Image 1 (cartoon, rainbow, N blue to C red):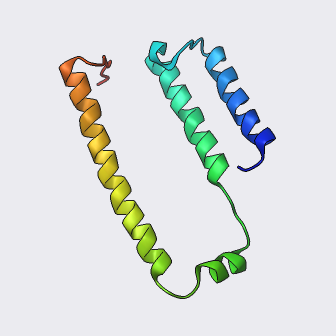
Image 2 (image 1 turned 180 degrees about the vertical axis):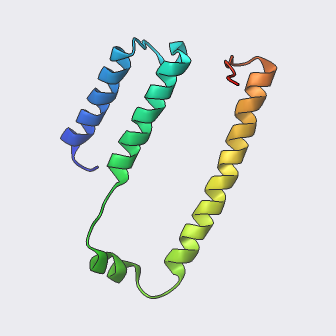
Length: 105
């Protein structure tokens, strides 16, 4: 997303979406609003990172070695570890009362 106009459009869309939900700040969101907001964030990230590209060019760029495969594997493990740490911090903050969460069944 190197195009600044396109980047600005994503920001404006996100701001408008929040305004439509009546969200003044993320901290004041109702659970359903937060769910819609999370969907928007996911959609925005997916659009920003989606690049079909040319398969032959991508294969040429990656090459025949296993360097890319190993890098993706390492990234995946590190990302999963970080996600677990973040989850434990998040649930700990809920348990301690630092943040309030509405638990659904």
